Amino acid sequence: NKGFKWYKWVLVFYPSNADAEIYSSISGRVIDANTKQGISNVLVLVISYLPDSKTHVFKGKTDEKGNYSIEIIPSGEYALGVIYPTGYYYSNTEDKKIVVIKGKNIIDVNFELLRTGSVSGTAYQSDGVTPIINAPIFITTSQNSFASAITDNNGNFLFSNLAPSENTTLKAWTFGQFSVNLYGVKISSASVTQNIKIIFPTVIGMATMDNT
Image (cartoon, one colour):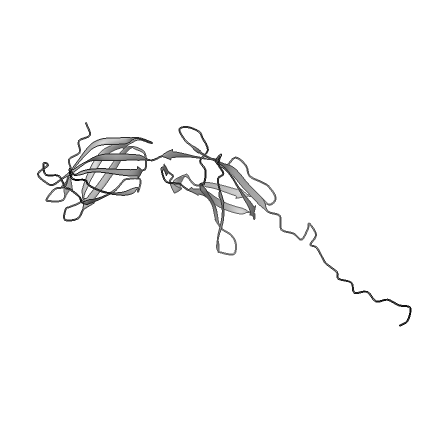
């Protein structure tokens, strides 16, 4: 072998563009519906049932200006929604249905979130005079909001993070009392509906509401 040198070659194969998967991206902005300012740290989800019958979830988070971008999404049909931060309300009925086409980026998929509202007032026993003090009170709304509060020494309560509504029904209950419904309650975004009076009856029925 005198006079010859042997070399070891390592061959590396790269996939051609024809073989490589081509992905897409989805981007947009999440803003406050009233101020139009961006909301940071909102989790944005892209969910789909692709042909392999598995649930695929892609996610991104908004920056300080409310912008988000979700990369490497294969073609298919998706539902796009957000996990709203504390102080804001979002319903999954507002999810956006989108179709991702291979290699085509989708932009300006935006969301506007409303600030939640609050309800305050006083809880009474069936006589309408004796307050229910230092007790846990629970409510749900027609928009499926849930909240709890503990009354103070005067029976006063404050429920926060409720879905805004022009006309909702509150269902309230506490330990040792029947549940009651309060009809026609208005919950405004970023404000407190005050002077709600809940009288828990000794029999099942509608509570007295007074927010005048």
